[in-house]
Amino acid sequence: MKVLNRKARYNYQILEKYEAGIALIGAEVKAIRAGNISINQAYAKEVNGEIYLVNANISVPGKKEYNPTRSRKLLLHKSEIVSIITKIKAKKLTLVPTKVYTRGRLIKAEIALAKSKRKYQKKELLKRRSIERDVERELKDI
Figure (cartoon, rainbow, N blue to C red):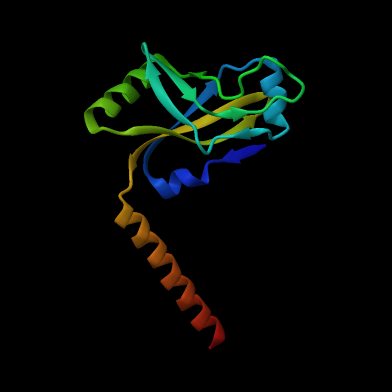
């Protein structure tokens, strides 16, 4: 099972990736294995020396009194956390979840240090892709 955040590559320039575990409750694990997770609006932030995944939507069917977008703690080594925090503060970077996947019986999240793209960079990328697509069509017709 793998869930990708496709908007992350479009909106951000990915610089460095980290693998982290997620602190979940039992019903959330079952929902993630079924594919009931969305990380398109999610981001990660540092709170009191720990890193949390915020706004990841895990819909658990049949559970009342449950907040599907609650903050979840990401499980990283202390040295990784210190490294991430210093890079965020020094270079003004953002922590973005790029994918959530299973490894054996564990559920992991891949978070990335990213720099936000400007509007003109996004337009330039779309323009370059369309030109490459047109060239491929022309070569295919020949």
